[in-house]
Amino acid sequence: MTAGRPPVVRRAPGKLFVAGEYAVVEPGNPAILVAVDRRVTATVTEPSGDGTLVSSDLLAAPVRWLRRGDRLDPVGVEDADRARRELAHVLAALGTVTRLLAEHGRPAPELDIAVSSELHRDGVKFGLGSSGAVTVATVAAVAAHCGLALSAEERYRLALLASAELDPKGSGGDLAASTWGGWIAYRSPDRAAVLDLVRRRGVAGALAEPWPGFEVRRLPPPAGVALEVGWTGTPASTTELVSGLHRRAWRGTPPHRRFVAASADLVRAAADAIEHGDGAALLDSVRRARRELARLDQEAGLGVFTPALTALCDAAEAVGGAAKPSGAGGGDCGIALLEVPDTRARPDTPDVADAADATDAAESADAPDPRTAPGTAASGNSRAGATAAPPDIDHLRERWTAAGVRPLDLRPATEGNEE
Image (cartoon, rainbow, N blue to C red; front, top):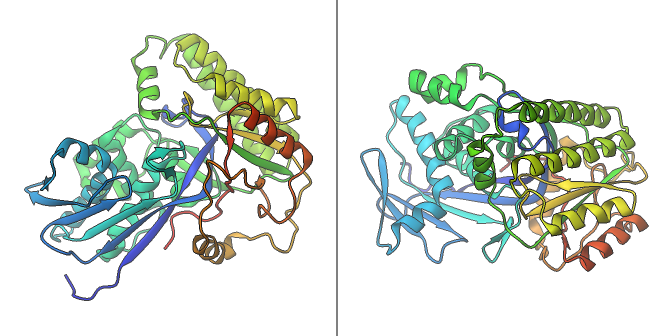
Protein backbone atom coordinates (compact mmCIF):
# COMPACT_ATOMS: atom_id res chain seq x y z
CA MET A 1 0.00 0.00 0.00
CA THR A 2 1.20 3.49 -0.72
CA ALA A 3 1.84 5.53 2.43
CA GLY A 4 0.00 8.79 2.78
CA ARG A 5 -2.83 7.93 0.39
CA PRO A 6 -5.68 10.38 1.07
CA PRO A 7 -9.02 9.13 2.38
CA VAL A 8 -11.60 8.09 -0.20
CA VAL A 9 -15.16 9.20 0.56
CA ARG A 10 -18.20 7.96 -1.37
CA ARG A 11 -21.85 8.71 -0.68
CA ALA A 12 -24.98 6.91 -1.85
CA PRO A 13 -28.56 8.16 -1.48
CA GLY A 14 -31.47 6.23 -0.06
CA LYS A 15 -34.49 5.32 -2.13
CA LEU A 16 -38.27 5.08 -2.32
CA PHE A 17 -40.31 2.72 -4.46
CA VAL A 18 -42.89 4.64 -6.47
CA ALA A 19 -44.48 1.58 -8.12
CA GLY A 20 -43.73 -2.05 -8.89
CA GLU A 21 -42.64 -3.51 -5.53
CA TYR A 22 -43.00 -7.28 -5.07
CA ALA A 23 -43.51 -7.85 -8.81
CA VAL A 24 -40.03 -6.45 -9.53
CA VAL A 25 -38.42 -9.38 -7.72
CA GLU A 26 -39.39 -11.48 -10.74
CA PRO A 27 -36.58 -11.10 -13.34
CA GLY A 28 -37.30 -8.57 -16.06
CA ASN A 29 -40.29 -7.02 -14.32
CA PRO A 30 -40.34 -3.21 -14.06
CA ALA A 31 -40.51 -0.75 -11.20
CA ILE A 32 -40.08 2.98 -10.70
CA LEU A 33 -37.91 4.30 -7.89
CA VAL A 34 -36.64 7.68 -6.78
CA ALA A 35 -33.46 8.45 -4.85
CA VAL A 36 -33.80 10.71 -1.81
CA ASP A 37 -31.47 13.30 -0.32
CA ARG A 38 -30.48 11.31 2.75
CA ARG A 39 -27.27 9.39 2.27
CA VAL A 40 -24.90 6.77 3.52
CA THR A 41 -21.23 7.79 3.58
CA ALA A 42 -18.38 5.28 3.34
CA THR A 43 -14.86 6.52 4.08
CA VAL A 44 -11.85 4.32 3.32
CA THR A 45 -8.41 5.13 4.71
CA GLU A 46 -5.03 3.51 5.09
CA PRO A 47 -5.02 0.67 7.66
CA SER A 48 -4.50 1.62 11.28
CA GLY A 49 -3.30 -1.90 12.09
CA ASP A 50 -3.45 -5.46 10.83
CA GLY A 51 -6.43 -6.50 8.74
CA THR A 52 -9.49 -4.34 8.22
CA LEU A 53 -11.03 -2.04 10.81
CA VAL A 54 -14.74 -1.34 10.25
CA SER A 55 -16.62 1.30 12.19
CA SER A 56 -20.30 2.10 11.89
CA ASP A 57 -22.67 4.46 13.65
CA LEU A 58 -24.79 1.37 14.34
CA LEU A 59 -22.05 -0.18 16.48
CA ALA A 60 -20.74 0.98 19.84
CA ALA A 61 -17.12 0.43 18.82
CA PRO A 62 -15.09 -0.39 15.67
CA VAL A 63 -14.47 -4.04 14.85
CA ARG A 64 -11.18 -5.34 13.49
CA TRP A 65 -11.32 -8.22 11.02
CA LEU A 66 -8.43 -10.50 10.18
CA ARG A 67 -8.33 -12.55 7.02
CA ARG A 68 -8.09 -16.32 7.32
CA GLY A 69 -8.07 -17.66 3.79
CA ASP A 70 -11.16 -16.30 2.05
CA ARG A 71 -12.86 -15.46 5.33
CA LEU A 72 -12.76 -12.39 7.53
CA ASP A 73 -13.06 -13.09 11.26
CA PRO A 74 -13.63 -10.46 13.97
CA VAL A 75 -11.17 -10.16 16.81
CA GLY A 76 -11.68 -8.77 20.28
CA VAL A 77 -15.51 -8.75 20.22
CA GLU A 78 -17.83 -10.60 22.59
CA ASP A 79 -20.65 -11.15 20.08
CA ALA A 80 -19.11 -12.09 16.74
CA ASP A 81 -22.48 -13.08 15.25
CA ARG A 82 -23.96 -9.65 15.99
CA ALA A 83 -20.95 -7.96 14.43
CA ARG A 84 -21.40 -10.05 11.29
CA ARG A 85 -25.10 -9.24 11.13
CA GLU A 86 -24.66 -5.52 11.64
CA LEU A 87 -21.81 -5.27 9.12
CA ALA A 88 -23.00 -7.93 6.66
CA HIS A 89 -23.43 -5.53 3.73
CA VAL A 90 -20.10 -3.81 4.34
CA LEU A 91 -18.31 -7.16 4.48
CA ALA A 92 -20.11 -8.47 1.39
CA ALA A 93 -19.18 -5.33 -0.57
CA LEU A 94 -15.55 -5.60 0.56
CA GLY A 95 -15.48 -9.29 -0.31
CA THR A 96 -16.83 -8.75 -3.82
CA VAL A 97 -14.27 -6.05 -4.63
CA THR A 98 -11.54 -8.23 -3.10
CA ARG A 99 -12.53 -11.11 -5.37
CA LEU A 100 -12.33 -8.82 -8.41
CA LEU A 101 -8.86 -7.69 -7.33
CA ALA A 102 -7.76 -11.31 -6.90
CA GLU A 103 -8.86 -12.10 -10.44
CA HIS A 104 -6.48 -9.36 -11.57
CA GLY A 105 -3.66 -10.85 -9.51
CA ARG A 106 -3.83 -8.28 -6.73
CA PRO A 107 -3.76 -9.07 -3.00
CA ALA A 108 -6.64 -8.56 -0.63
CA PRO A 109 -6.57 -4.95 0.61
CA GLU A 110 -5.96 -3.98 4.21
CA LEU A 111 -7.77 -0.76 5.04
CA ASP A 112 -10.08 1.01 7.45
CA ILE A 113 -13.73 1.54 6.54
CA ALA A 114 -16.00 4.00 8.37
CA VAL A 115 -19.72 4.04 7.59
CA SER A 116 -22.21 6.68 8.67
CA SER A 117 -25.84 7.02 7.69
CA GLU A 118 -28.60 9.62 7.52
CA LEU A 119 -31.12 6.84 6.88
CA HIS A 120 -31.69 6.03 10.53
CA ARG A 121 -31.98 7.86 13.79
CA ASP A 122 -30.58 6.31 16.98
CA GLY A 123 -30.44 2.95 15.23
CA VAL A 124 -34.08 3.04 14.06
CA LYS A 125 -34.25 2.77 10.28
CA PHE A 126 -36.84 4.64 8.24
CA GLY A 127 -37.15 2.13 5.39
CA LEU A 128 -35.22 4.21 2.86
CA GLY A 129 -32.97 1.46 1.53
CA SER A 130 -30.10 1.77 3.98
CA SER A 131 -28.71 -1.71 3.23
CA GLY A 132 -28.54 -0.95 -0.49
CA ALA A 133 -26.99 2.47 0.06
CA VAL A 134 -24.37 1.00 2.42
CA THR A 135 -23.47 -1.62 -0.19
CA VAL A 136 -23.21 0.88 -3.05
CA ALA A 137 -21.18 3.40 -1.04
CA THR A 138 -18.80 0.73 0.27
CA VAL A 139 -18.22 -0.84 -3.14
CA ALA A 140 -17.45 2.57 -4.62
CA ALA A 141 -15.14 3.66 -1.80
CA VAL A 142 -13.15 0.42 -1.62
CA ALA A 143 -12.83 0.18 -5.41
CA ALA A 144 -11.64 3.78 -5.69
CA HIS A 145 -9.15 3.31 -2.83
CA CYS A 146 -7.74 0.30 -4.67
CA GLY A 147 -7.40 2.24 -7.93
CA LEU A 148 -10.26 0.59 -9.82
CA ALA A 149 -11.91 2.95 -12.30
CA LEU A 150 -15.48 1.70 -12.54
CA SER A 151 -18.49 2.93 -14.47
CA ALA A 152 -21.82 3.44 -12.73
CA GLU A 153 -23.12 0.16 -14.13
CA GLU A 154 -20.04 -1.72 -12.95
CA ARG A 155 -20.49 -0.32 -9.45
CA TYR A 156 -24.14 -1.35 -9.52
CA ARG A 157 -23.22 -4.84 -10.71
CA LEU A 158 -20.64 -5.32 -7.97
CA ALA A 159 -23.18 -4.12 -5.40
CA LEU A 160 -25.78 -6.54 -6.78
CA LEU A 161 -23.32 -9.44 -6.58
CA ALA A 162 -22.53 -8.52 -2.98
CA SER A 163 -26.22 -8.24 -2.06
CA ALA A 164 -27.16 -11.46 -3.84
CA GLU A 165 -24.69 -13.35 -1.66
CA LEU A 166 -26.79 -12.32 1.34
CA ASP A 167 -30.26 -12.46 -0.24
CA PRO A 168 -30.66 -13.55 -3.89
CA LYS A 169 -34.37 -12.70 -3.74
CA GLY A 170 -33.75 -8.95 -3.53
CA SER A 171 -34.55 -7.12 -6.77
CA GLY A 172 -31.60 -4.71 -6.64
CA GLY A 173 -33.85 -1.74 -7.26
CA ASP A 174 -32.48 -0.02 -4.18
CA LEU A 175 -28.94 -0.47 -5.52
CA ALA A 176 -29.90 1.07 -8.86
CA ALA A 177 -31.51 4.10 -7.22
CA SER A 178 -28.46 4.57 -4.97
CA THR A 179 -26.13 4.27 -7.99
CA TRP A 180 -27.85 6.47 -10.56
CA GLY A 181 -29.99 8.76 -8.41
CA GLY A 182 -33.03 10.69 -9.59
CA TRP A 183 -36.16 8.98 -10.87
CA ILE A 184 -35.46 5.69 -12.62
CA ALA A 185 -37.30 2.95 -14.47
CA TYR A 186 -35.74 -0.35 -13.49
CA ARG A 187 -35.99 -4.01 -14.45
CA SER A 188 -34.40 -6.60 -12.21
CA PRO A 189 -31.84 -9.07 -13.57
CA ASP A 190 -32.18 -12.81 -13.22
CA ARG A 191 -30.12 -13.19 -10.05
CA ALA A 192 -29.79 -16.97 -10.38
CA ALA A 193 -28.37 -16.54 -13.88
CA VAL A 194 -26.04 -13.79 -12.68
CA LEU A 195 -24.70 -15.88 -9.79
CA ASP A 196 -24.20 -18.79 -12.17
CA LEU A 197 -22.31 -16.46 -14.48
CA VAL A 198 -20.00 -15.52 -11.60
CA ARG A 199 -19.34 -19.18 -10.86
CA ARG A 200 -18.47 -19.83 -14.49
CA ARG A 201 -16.73 -16.60 -15.50
CA GLY A 202 -15.73 -14.91 -12.27
CA VAL A 203 -16.59 -11.40 -11.14
CA ALA A 204 -14.76 -9.77 -14.05
CA GLY A 205 -16.68 -11.93 -16.50
CA ALA A 206 -19.96 -11.02 -14.82
CA LEU A 207 -19.14 -7.32 -15.24
CA ALA A 208 -18.60 -7.79 -18.96
CA GLU A 209 -21.45 -10.12 -19.92
CA PRO A 210 -25.08 -9.08 -20.52
CA TRP A 211 -27.40 -9.70 -17.57
CA PRO A 212 -30.75 -11.29 -18.51
CA GLY A 213 -33.70 -9.06 -17.64
CA PHE A 214 -31.67 -6.08 -16.43
CA GLU A 215 -32.49 -2.55 -17.59
CA VAL A 216 -32.26 0.89 -16.03
CA ARG A 217 -33.02 4.30 -17.48
CA ARG A 218 -33.37 7.77 -16.05
CA LEU A 219 -36.77 9.41 -16.00
CA PRO A 220 -37.34 13.17 -15.88
CA PRO A 221 -38.62 14.64 -12.61
CA PRO A 222 -42.44 14.53 -12.80
CA ALA A 223 -43.93 17.82 -13.92
CA GLY A 224 -46.38 19.48 -11.59
CA VAL A 225 -46.25 16.74 -8.95
CA ALA A 226 -45.03 16.98 -5.36
CA LEU A 227 -43.70 13.93 -3.54
CA GLU A 228 -44.46 13.70 0.18
CA VAL A 229 -43.10 10.97 2.46
CA GLY A 230 -44.58 9.78 5.75
CA TRP A 231 -43.01 7.46 8.30
CA THR A 232 -45.25 5.13 10.28
CA GLY A 233 -42.82 4.90 13.19
CA THR A 234 -42.62 1.11 12.82
CA PRO A 235 -39.56 -0.43 11.16
CA ALA A 236 -40.20 -3.39 8.85
CA SER A 237 -38.01 -6.07 7.27
CA THR A 238 -38.19 -6.12 3.49
CA THR A 239 -36.21 -9.37 3.44
CA GLU A 240 -38.72 -11.11 5.70
CA LEU A 241 -41.75 -9.85 3.78
CA VAL A 242 -40.37 -10.81 0.36
CA SER A 243 -39.20 -14.15 1.72
CA GLY A 244 -42.71 -14.67 3.07
CA LEU A 245 -44.12 -14.28 -0.43
CA HIS A 246 -41.63 -16.81 -1.79
CA ARG A 247 -42.62 -19.32 0.88
CA ARG A 248 -46.34 -19.10 0.19
CA ALA A 249 -48.14 -21.43 -2.17
CA TRP A 250 -49.80 -18.35 -3.69
CA ARG A 251 -46.62 -17.58 -5.64
CA GLY A 252 -46.82 -19.04 -9.14
CA THR A 253 -50.61 -19.32 -9.09
CA PRO A 254 -52.89 -17.57 -11.61
CA PRO A 255 -53.60 -14.73 -9.11
CA HIS A 256 -49.86 -14.20 -8.69
CA ARG A 257 -49.34 -14.09 -12.45
CA ARG A 258 -52.22 -11.64 -12.74
CA PHE A 259 -50.63 -9.43 -10.08
CA VAL A 260 -47.28 -9.41 -11.88
CA ALA A 261 -48.94 -8.54 -15.20
CA ALA A 262 -51.06 -5.80 -13.64
CA SER A 263 -48.02 -4.34 -11.88
CA ALA A 264 -46.05 -4.28 -15.14
CA ASP A 265 -48.92 -2.51 -16.89
CA LEU A 266 -49.33 0.20 -14.24
CA VAL A 267 -45.56 0.79 -14.06
CA ARG A 268 -45.45 1.29 -17.83
CA ALA A 269 -48.38 3.71 -17.56
CA ALA A 270 -46.66 5.61 -14.74
CA ALA A 271 -43.39 5.89 -16.67
CA ASP A 272 -45.27 7.13 -19.72
CA ALA A 273 -47.11 9.70 -17.59
CA ILE A 274 -43.82 10.95 -16.12
CA GLU A 275 -42.18 11.24 -19.52
CA HIS A 276 -45.15 13.13 -20.94
CA GLY A 277 -45.64 15.42 -17.96
CA ASP A 278 -49.13 14.05 -17.21
CA GLY A 279 -49.49 14.45 -13.46
CA ALA A 280 -53.10 13.26 -13.33
CA ALA A 281 -52.22 10.03 -15.13
CA LEU A 282 -49.29 9.47 -12.78
CA LEU A 283 -51.56 9.80 -9.76
CA ASP A 284 -54.00 7.34 -11.36
CA SER A 285 -51.16 4.83 -11.74
CA VAL A 286 -50.19 5.25 -8.09
CA ARG A 287 -53.80 4.60 -7.07
CA ARG A 288 -53.77 1.44 -9.18
CA ALA A 289 -50.54 0.41 -7.49
CA ARG A 290 -52.19 0.80 -4.08
CA ARG A 291 -55.14 -1.34 -5.17
CA GLU A 292 -52.88 -4.07 -6.53
CA LEU A 293 -50.81 -4.14 -3.34
CA ALA A 294 -54.02 -4.35 -1.31
CA ARG A 295 -55.21 -7.28 -3.44
CA LEU A 296 -51.83 -8.97 -3.04
CA ASP A 297 -52.03 -8.43 0.70
CA GLN A 298 -55.51 -9.93 0.88
CA GLU A 299 -54.67 -12.94 -1.27
CA ALA A 300 -51.22 -13.75 0.15
CA GLY A 301 -51.65 -12.52 3.72
CA LEU A 302 -48.31 -10.71 3.88
CA GLY A 303 -49.24 -7.85 6.18
CA VAL A 304 -48.30 -5.13 3.68
CA PHE A 305 -50.91 -2.67 4.92
CA THR A 306 -50.75 -1.68 8.58
CA PRO A 307 -53.34 0.65 10.14
CA ALA A 308 -50.80 3.48 9.93
CA LEU A 309 -50.10 2.90 6.24
CA THR A 310 -53.83 2.74 5.50
CA ALA A 311 -54.34 6.03 7.35
CA LEU A 312 -51.43 7.54 5.42
CA CYS A 313 -53.02 6.60 2.10
CA ASP A 314 -56.54 7.67 3.09
CA ALA A 315 -55.28 11.07 4.23
CA ALA A 316 -53.68 11.69 0.85
CA GLU A 317 -56.84 10.70 -1.01
CA ALA A 318 -58.85 13.07 1.20
CA VAL A 319 -56.84 16.06 -0.07
CA GLY A 320 -56.90 14.95 -3.73
CA GLY A 321 -53.61 13.06 -3.81
CA ALA A 322 -52.61 9.47 -4.42
CA ALA A 323 -50.66 7.36 -1.95
CA LYS A 324 -49.33 3.88 -1.28
CA PRO A 325 -46.77 2.02 0.82
CA SER A 326 -43.25 2.44 -0.51
CA GLY A 327 -41.46 -0.88 -0.69
CA ALA A 328 -42.55 -4.04 1.05
CA GLY A 329 -44.86 -2.32 3.54
CA GLY A 330 -45.50 -3.76 6.98
CA GLY A 331 -44.44 -0.40 8.43
CA ASP A 332 -41.64 1.93 7.33
CA CYS A 333 -42.67 4.64 4.85
CA GLY A 334 -45.48 5.52 2.51
CA ILE A 335 -45.50 8.07 -0.28
CA ALA A 336 -48.09 10.55 -1.48
CA LEU A 337 -48.15 12.38 -4.79
CA LEU A 338 -50.10 15.61 -5.17
CA GLU A 339 -50.55 17.84 -8.18
CA VAL A 340 -48.98 21.28 -7.77
CA PRO A 341 -48.07 24.08 -10.21
CA ASP A 342 -45.18 23.00 -12.44
CA THR A 343 -42.05 24.93 -11.47
CA ARG A 344 -39.49 23.18 -13.62
CA ALA A 345 -38.66 26.42 -15.44
CA ARG A 346 -37.58 28.16 -12.22
CA PRO A 347 -33.99 29.46 -12.52
CA ASP A 348 -33.04 27.93 -9.14
CA THR A 349 -33.97 24.41 -10.22
CA PRO A 350 -30.81 22.27 -10.41
CA ASP A 351 -30.24 20.04 -13.41
CA VAL A 352 -28.07 16.94 -13.52
CA ALA A 353 -25.01 18.96 -14.55
CA ASP A 354 -25.34 21.01 -11.37
CA ALA A 355 -25.98 18.02 -9.13
CA ALA A 356 -22.45 17.94 -7.68
CA ASP A 357 -22.75 21.54 -6.50
CA ALA A 358 -26.16 20.79 -5.03
CA THR A 359 -24.73 17.76 -3.25
CA ASP A 360 -21.89 19.76 -1.72
CA ALA A 361 -24.32 22.37 -0.45
CA ALA A 362 -26.73 19.80 0.98
CA GLU A 363 -24.00 17.84 2.72
CA SER A 364 -22.48 20.93 4.34
CA ALA A 365 -25.73 21.63 6.20
CA ASP A 366 -26.84 19.91 9.38
CA ALA A 367 -29.42 17.22 8.60
CA PRO A 368 -32.76 17.93 10.34
CA ASP A 369 -34.27 15.30 12.60
CA PRO A 370 -36.89 13.58 10.43
CA ARG A 371 -38.81 12.52 13.52
CA THR A 372 -39.65 16.09 14.42
CA ALA A 373 -39.17 18.24 11.33
CA PRO A 374 -42.24 18.23 9.05
CA GLY A 375 -40.07 19.76 6.35
CA THR A 376 -41.06 21.16 3.01
CA ALA A 377 -42.58 19.76 -0.12
CA ALA A 378 -40.38 17.14 -1.74
CA SER A 379 -41.34 18.21 -5.23
CA GLY A 380 -40.37 15.99 -8.10
CA ASN A 381 -39.40 18.98 -10.16
CA SER A 382 -38.17 21.87 -8.01
CA ARG A 383 -36.08 22.60 -4.99
CA ALA A 384 -38.02 22.00 -1.84
CA GLY A 385 -38.23 25.04 0.40
CA ALA A 386 -38.05 27.61 -2.41
CA THR A 387 -41.67 28.60 -1.70
CA ALA A 388 -44.29 27.87 0.91
CA ALA A 389 -46.03 24.51 0.65
CA PRO A 390 -49.38 24.53 -1.22
CA PRO A 391 -52.46 24.25 1.02
CA ASP A 392 -53.16 20.62 0.08
CA ILE A 393 -49.67 19.63 1.25
CA ASP A 394 -50.15 21.47 4.54
CA HIS A 395 -53.49 19.73 5.02
CA LEU A 396 -51.91 16.37 4.23
CA ARG A 397 -49.18 16.85 6.82
CA GLU A 398 -51.75 17.88 9.41
CA ARG A 399 -53.80 14.76 8.71
CA TRP A 400 -50.72 12.55 8.86
CA THR A 401 -49.62 14.05 12.16
CA ALA A 402 -53.09 13.55 13.63
CA ALA A 403 -52.97 9.89 12.53
CA GLY A 404 -49.54 9.32 14.10
CA VAL A 405 -47.68 9.40 10.77
CA ARG A 406 -44.60 11.60 10.77
CA PRO A 407 -43.87 13.67 7.64
CA LEU A 408 -40.23 13.31 6.64
CA ASP A 409 -38.18 16.19 5.32
CA LEU A 410 -37.01 14.52 2.11
CA ARG A 411 -36.41 15.59 -1.48
CA PRO A 412 -35.56 13.60 -4.59
CA ALA A 413 -31.80 13.41 -5.06
CA THR A 414 -30.80 14.07 -8.65
CA GLU A 415 -27.32 12.65 -8.07
CA GLY A 416 -26.50 9.04 -7.31
CA ASN A 417 -23.34 7.49 -5.93
CA GLU A 418 -20.88 10.39 -5.76
CA GLU A 419 -17.65 11.51 -4.13
